[in-house]
Length: 214
Image 1 (cartoon, rainbow, N blue to C red):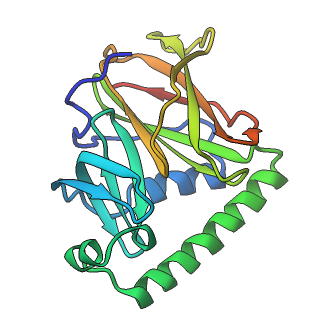
Image 2: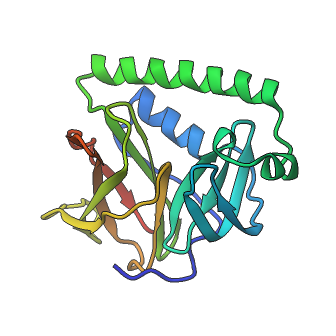
């Protein structure tokens, strides 16, 4: 997989085929808030470092950044220093309310996925440009250390035919919630899926999302 400097291209349109309610909600979560795009370095209170990242957006309970390797990571404010909290306008009451709302919504989505017979890890996707797609996910299975992301080529025809899945990324930073997949051919289909890992093992594979470059 080629990683280039087009991780932050502006989103033009989105499409997910055979959408269920919880998959629609993934799209909504992924599109919240405008891009801030401020280069910065972050170090959490337990020593995790995120260097030369771009701030994508600031949510009440954390900062969403894009790394050099195109991973989309949410750093919770409760893992950051008082100085960083002040710089980005942290409000404990707003953060608590927002976190409670998000937990309730994600819990409802997890129950819906379970009722649908879906996986604990759910992935969605949308096109960004003629050479880039954006993937985003939620994980209800384990407290993950990282994810394994796989992609299958679906061709460029009117009806996608996804072939063999190949692992394209296994070294995501902690708290990763998405990935900008770049350097792709124009008007090309891909099927993508992932699973979570921690010291105790791995989750089951997610659903497979079908996404096409513009």
